[in-house]
Amino acid sequence: MEIRIHPISGVASDSRPVLITPPPDKSILHRILLIGSLTQSAIRIPISGIYSISHDVIATVLALESLGVPVEIFDDHIELHGVGRKGYRAPTHVINCANSGTTARLLMGVLAGQSFGSALSGDVSLSARPMRRVATLLEALGANVITGPEGTLPIMINGRRLHGASLSLPVASAQMKSAVLLAGLFAEGITAVREPSQSRDHTERMLASFGYDIEIDDEIRLNPVTNPSIVDEIVYEVPGDASSAAFLVVAAILLRRRITLLGVGLNPTRTRFLDVLAVMGVEMEAQNVLDSFGEPRGDLTVFADQIEGALLPLELSDEDIPLLIDELPILFILAMFSEGVSEIRGAGELRKKESDRIAVSVEQLRRFGVEVMEYEDGLSIVGILERRLQPCTIIHDGDHRLAMAFSIAALFCTTEVELDEAEAVCVSYPDFFEHLRALCGRKHVETIEP
Image: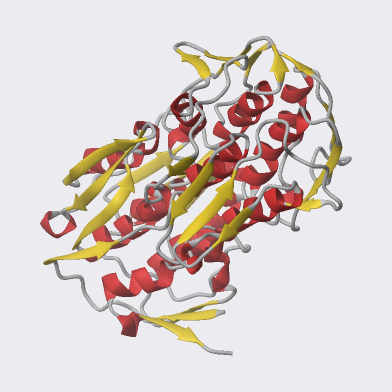
């Protein structure tokens, strides 16, 4: 799919709110599918439409089907019937995780304690991403995991009995932590995990909401003896994805349009992005906040129409990075149009994502005519207050978050720009371009039919 982006001529504030319903949070959706499959419950997950489900989540659905879990996507909901911790069956083929690192790493934990062997593969991008660190952690619980020669997919997992252990993660990572905790459900004894700093805590919250014995203080301790709460039927409403919504929020800020995100997740480990915006001078308000299964959500209004003057530059610490890892690409774009020099360091993990997000971002920002300095663990960006970028070929290496970020930046090129392989956004946000049109007008974001 090709998208042609036509430039915005001038930026005028508009107090009419644009209402956006973000896609369901894929971090949470992965987890309710996997953790729900280990219960004995029938779980119904409402969705706004089959096409709102990201390709990453579909990879998890297909993986569960191959393991004998009844799961099906309908027009308005996903239906899952848990089979219990001993109910998986051996797959008859290699499980393809497509582009989803969450699917691969969390499945490694679930499959490590099974009574059968299994294998995981992925697409070219996922097959270049590191898996050895997760395998090493699981091996401390007694797992047998064989990665490819470079510590990547494909992976062989020889299921066996596991034992509890006390582990320290090499970096703050929700995926590593979740893989260990899910493996801990099949271990004898307590599994304890300590992180160097806070990462997303969706797995801990969900395990606690299902009645597992999990304690959280300076470390996370899971006792697998306790069985989850037995509920025949559960309706689990997944909050809107805060990381995906961040891209529309930045677009709204640059366009000075007020935006309201309906039902967006407000988990404190996902709202550091909002804290950053507040420091930069952006006002916002959350309403209709409620908590379900330990996950807060609400309607968030960002008053981008009330911004006066230039935005302050970004100032991020090492502790910010794990809580901003998915939002950093769009923060780069915000930094481009902020006053002064923004510096992002301690973000070396970006080089191990769907692409080398540091290298690709530096190259693309320079194509836009932005002064940028590359470091091994980040970059610095000199802001352009006049918001006039050089038109150029957009490169995103098939990375969904870079494709979205650079599309928003392209609105401020002096002439139209084309984005090839735009379908990459479907990995996380299938409705992205339609929602972007709602902000800037249909004439500025044109789909070119083949």
